[in-house]
Length: 364
Ligand SMILES: Nc1nc2c(ncn2[C@@H]2O[C@H](COP(=O)(O)OP(=O)(O)OP(=O)(O)O)[C@@H](O)[C@H]2O)c(=O)[nH]1
Ligand SMILES: [Mg+2]
Ligand SMILES: [Zn+2]
Image 1 (cartoon, protein in one colour):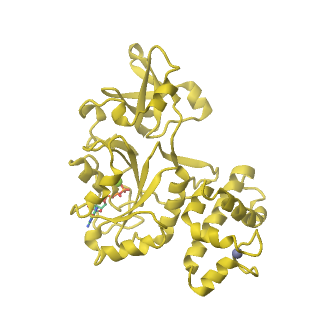
Image 2 (cartoon, rainbow, N blue to C red):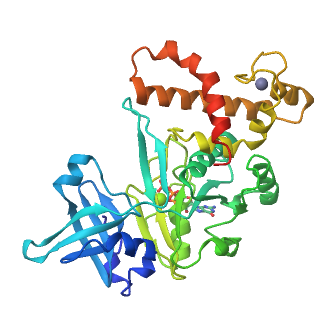
Image 3 (cartoon, rainbow, N blue to C red):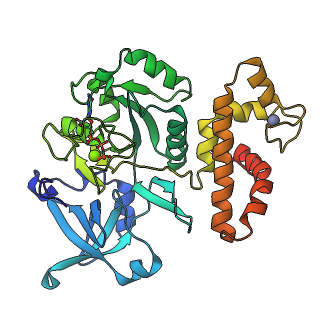
């Protein structure tokens, strides 16, 4: 943790309830009696976790058993700590069941999803007026947000730089099928109050988006004081360095919990098939009328999806984006199941089947 970041212990004393602890957690925790404490992970630095507990925070490691199982607590997780003051350390010995889990596909060869944050109620997909605004990337974020179980909200920051922020919002609304799109300026404060409905006390919001869109600037504004470093680079671009390097949970003045994340350079789709269905509901609906149940919506006869493109009711770019995500999903699943060997051959075969599977997960 860098020096400018205040430790949670410096904030007024909070209770577990303030961190979002519920009766469900209480029940799951009740089997632990003795020198056990419950807490919520606020920050992870490689092998050290900062955990918020009743009245303060502790720094902890994890038990050998958790390590062996590869169960590493994520920011936002509720955990069980074994309190060992004589050893000068606390140890995380269990992770309580997660309500939601926000993950992205890893871009490495091993595959598998990488947890970004746990127990998130709302995901602010933060983009910025100007170069970052990209419908295709937002569809990607939406797919993983939908799959996580958290509610997505699209936040267009830097509205002060846009000639007409309302038009930008309208453009994005057309790809987001009912998801709220809120233009704000973290610098001028314009539109910030429209985020209030999502900032109820004890609910958890994660900020995700590219580097430089202003996630930390937004946290600082909502905290009412500078808790996070922000970049002073004027002409930020996608290749720019990342200012925030660790995920961290903050408690806003109003009582909501907000997680700042490092900018995501690449968002793999991971295994978020249900998320794809919710992101492209109109395509799944059209596909029900295709002649072939395994239609790929390419050149098949009787394809209702292609017919909609021809009729101008579905944009070709959106269909392309859907197909790209479906292919990526097929690829990720194969990677998880059979490794990279034999992949190319299997890859294309899987796509038709994948689209059928996605149809089945719709609405789940
Ligand atoms: N004009 C304008 N600039 C903004 C706004 N919000 C943030 N910025 C600027 O954008 C730059 C990047 O902001 P950060 O908050 O560091 O961005 P970030 O999303 O946290 O970036 P990473 O930590 O790298 O992921 C800074 O120079 C901010 O001052 C805004 O609403 N309007
Ligand atoms: Mg940041
Ligand atoms: Zn079709």
